[in-house]
Image 1: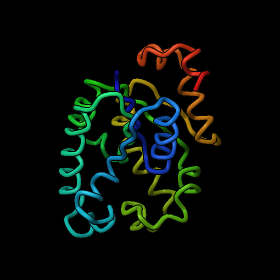
Image 2: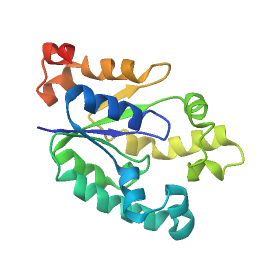
Image 3: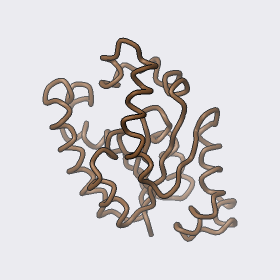
Image 4: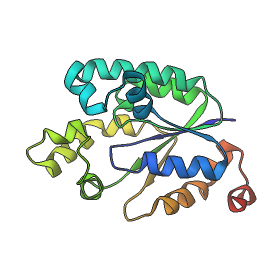
Length: 182
């Protein structure tokens, strides 16, 4: 069975939605950032500080290679996974790529209290910085099978939106009954 791969900018709900979706569909959940942190025994912020973004992206690509060989999983990807087209190509071989997106204001509201966001911590004007980063990554995020807006939605509502999408159900071989039973 195909993997469900969640991509999107930080704060769009990938991890929260992914955990709930995996539980609902009785699948194993993985978060690529969590896997990197466990492998290196350090936080993403500390990894960025100690080795830089380029080396972090290499670690990330290694985890993506591992994840792409899995089956029937829900995978929440770090926000920058899409920057390397090879990552998405690998994940797409056995997965459906669902991009979660939200407005810059919604993203900042969600991550305001989080201090583990290395790309945001260094910004003088977070709202403008988020807009700029999102714009720079727009084409990479559009390399998905389906896009779902999470603005103003609870994680449960995001899942309902995803699973009520006929294309997603078709790719995952789910019927409406399968979705409603869980």
